[in-house]
Structures are given as structure tokens and as C-alpha cells.
Length: 353
Image (cartoon, rainbow, N blue to C red; front, top):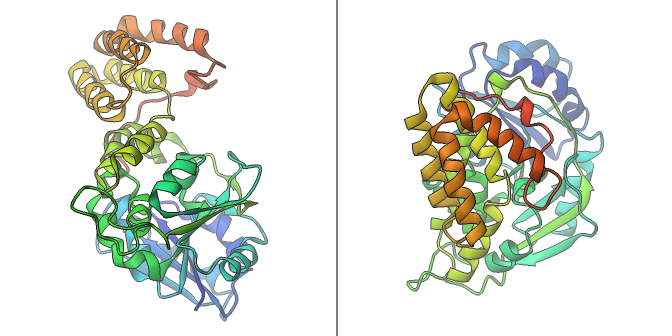
């Protein structure tokens, strides 16, 4: 089997019913479908029974977890249970293009020596394709952490990443277990050197970044079904603990802090504090995120913004109107690019893990 399209899912059967037909129409004898049901309220197998019955020849496997193990662990289950040479994980709410499987199979053939293939999305494009070699080069030339993190545009060489799956479980708290596993796999042997370097010259950790798109659209998921940005930001800096050189760690830290803007973090925490009357909790989260995410950014402007915004989180009644004014002043500048501030709604950090 050359390729497995794997979909980790939890309580989103309606999106599966909408998006799966495009995938099913493209399945061939060298391509299978794997669905990991993270113990949804309605079993995925029951919800999809009629749809899947229309494709009796397709190689389809549905695995239901005994309990909800969390989104990160469910992603890693896709890697663990894949039996093909290559793995493409697709979000349950993402619609793939009608020729995506053929495109991925073509690139697998052309770039079979790579560890990872990355494509564009409806929200990100690149002018030209390129190939990186090793962890240092990958992080230096990575044109968007958000796009690499976006699961549905990444295809993994299973033989190359599976020996490093332990890094994914170790750094599942980062909310980026796929990224952690990938970084660890860009070392030649998956081991770090005693000096804190990557332990190799990275000569065979090749990754291909394509200008093509494999995802057509992303559904507008209701707020109560979205992941918590604050939880993701709390864990993101854990990726910096992965063995790498000091220079590479600093470069990765810069890219991890590019999005979302600090102002977005402030408004979410201020709104949360106002809604739940938990300014102390919001302040704790703010301090933790800033100390982790901006550790390497010692610029005066960054330090002043962190200090100034802290009071907005501490006193949300005054802070919310002020941060909205700041957003309007900074909008469409290099500092802040967000026109949807009024649509920001605080969510329960642990409602969907």
C-alpha cells in the first residue's frame, strides 16, 4: 500500500458525511482510508454506514478508541496504525480537492527520498516550490509554521517518522505532535548529540514544499467545536525543548511567535476573565504564554507591550475597550493583522481536547 488517507475525528460526523465522498471517489488499490474515531457520542461507523456501503471495493478501516484520548494522541494514533508507506492526515472538517490523491501519489513518486511533503492551503500560498535538507534548513526556510501545523496539507514518509513517534507522544502537550515527530525525524538517526545539537549533519532529512493545493476549503466550525487557541499557545513553546542547536532554537522561537498577534492573546484572555470573573486565572495564563513564547524576544517594544497589556488582562472591564482601540490603531500594520476582533469568543480550554 503506497498511501493511507487518515482522518482523526471526534463528534463531527456531519462534516465527514459532507467531505468524505470526494476522498472516496479517489481511492484506488494503492490507496486506503483510515478513520480514527476518538470515541464520538455517535460511533462514526454507524453514522457512515450508508455512505461507505456505496464503495464496497474501497480499502476502508474505522478504529474506535475505547475513550477520548485527546486530539494530539488521536493524531498520533493515525501514525501508529497506518500500514502504508506514506501517510496523509486530513482534518474531518477539511474538503480536499478532486485531484488531490493523484497529486500526492505523483509527488510521492517524484520525492520518495523525502521525509515530508507540504502543500498550500486556501489561506496560504507560495511562489515557488523548494526542498530543505535537515532540521536547521527546514526551520530556517519554513515559510509558515501555521501552514506546516495545518495537518491536512502535510504528507509523511511513514518509514522515516515512525521510529521517532515517541517524540510525538512526549510533546503532545504542544498541540503539535505531528510537527514534533517530524522535527525529530529530520535527524539522520533520531538521536540528539550530547552538546544539544541535532546529533547529525541532517544530510538525509529532506522535505519538499509544493506550490500546489490539496485542500479546497475549510468548513466554518461553530465556536463550541473549535480547539482552544489559549491551550495551544500554552503548549507551543514546548517544541523548543526538542534537541536542536541554540541558533536553530532561536529561529524556531521567532517563527512560533509570529501568529497569533500578542493583541489577540490579550483580547481572548480579557474576554475570558470578564465572562467567568477569573482575572487571576487569565493573568496566570498570560504570564505563562508570554514568558514561554517571547523568551528570546527581548526588544524594548515587545517588553513594553507585554507590560502594558498585562494590566488589560488584570482589569478586563477597562482593558477590553482599550485593547479594541489598540487593535484599530495597529490593524493592517506589520504588528497586527486581524480584522475579526469583534468575532473573538472565549471558549472553554478543556471542552475539546
